[in-house]
Length: 416
Image 1 (cartoon, helix red, strand yellow):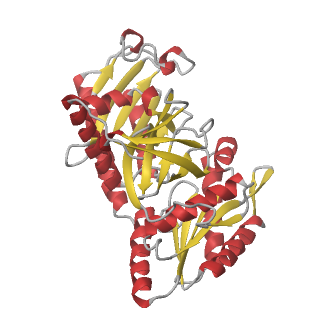
Image 2 (image 1 turned 90 degrees about the vertical axis):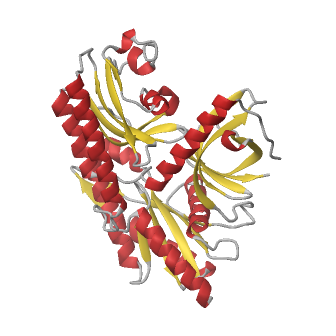
Image 3 (image 1 turned 90 degrees about the horizontal axis):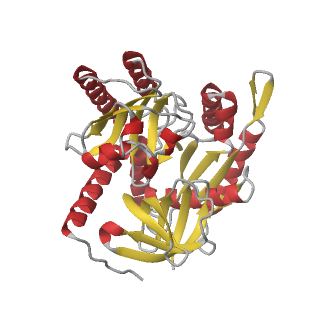
């Protein structure tokens, strides 16, 4: 059941500003995109110019700060509430803190009091042409230091370079590492093929695959080994696919395939062929041999699933169930097993997960939304109950949810 809540004028303005900011971030389509050498060069340049320990280019959604590129820290994202950069987003201005232990906003932050030992912070907003702050560029050090006006101007100019790079990437059709279509190009071409299929009444199916234990490989062997695995996965998919099939890289280790003229029964055969083709591949890394596997989710165009966002949501849900079932396997989306995963639209909204008689909450980002379901990302799904209340404060909306499928940071839920 949906409920509407009242907010004060200042609160309404803040909520509206955040809604507009998230809408602008959604238009960029940069969240969870693959590593980019241009951004990585930029963060290395930040370290060299300012002689600091850490350089970061990040984008900030409703619940986290996601690092598009980071040099000097071992993590790739942080909960938004734990970050320094949330203050930049809130005030929409540059912030320089010469000594974090003397600033009440930062002195008790775990990054200051803990092993990270952060003592200096300079962050400038990443702004769209319409003025929305969608992220930050920052320089961080483990010792207090000064940062003059000239330094700040240089960091602001580097933020402009970062936004120029965003515009270049938006126009790219091919992922530079794997040769697969970029997420934006894949979805645009998929939309064209789905419209064509609807006109001519022929089948289309979709497969989403996610490389198993990819983060562990990156952490153990480094990004170069991870890159080689991604190239191997893409090449193996091409060996099995037809010329008219679409292969796209949706994110770090996630790929999507669109299969024209393949129906609901045939798509599982294609998915299994892809799984078997990859599971026999091995990759040597130094003295070790890595076995590469992936988890696969499949679905097909239907009366309900007529657009690419809905197909990807259904295939994602099936893929998450494949991971839950043990990985290195194929699962098909079924409305009988996952009721409520009907038509979806892509969104980027701030949400809140409420449970434990309203005593416990988690901030979340809603990534796709339908009349009876949603796809949600959180910092960590560990400890998440199977049923909870999902609230969208900006819309005064609450509804009861049931988890249909999940992995470490993603939840597929149906409204009940």
